[in-house]
Image (cartoon, rainbow, N blue to C red; front, side, top):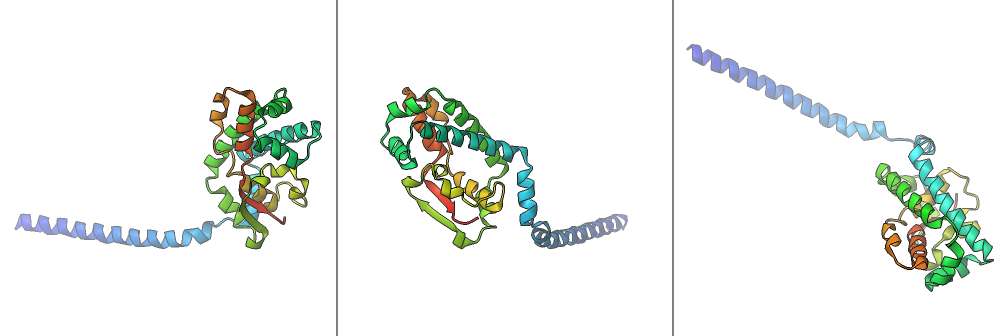
Length: 212
């Protein structure tokens, strides 16, 4: 009889524990269903956080440094953006070495590659997150080699105030580029290293924001 009472008491405790666990699980499910709405970040909060993030700002600074070096090299040779694209596409390594051999382009590219990796680690879904705030009819997707080095075409950035949502959307379109580039430094020919880095920095696949 004593053992029976102990067993009944143990069974009662098990039932109470099961009921408690079921209640907690149900409540958790209810919270999980509510959380996405409660924690959904607003557009203002998203971009304010981004504009004050050292990792994001470091990535932008590294990107702009490489862009400016390429712009300066193109300007020094009095080339149009399309003429420079032709030099790149025709693999004119001698001309590329002449243009960039005395610059810090390769070192700046490596700094950019590292900054981009850190940025992508923190914002793995950055492009989708940013473009979710942009109307679909303001985005053009494409794969056209003539669109490499889009930053050389000044009209692309016209009207896009720095750190605005449209400006960040443009930057998000560039994130599909420079996915690698580390192997560029293993190439034996200096001009080939430059071409490899330039191609990794500004690929042809991506998107373009047509309005800011």
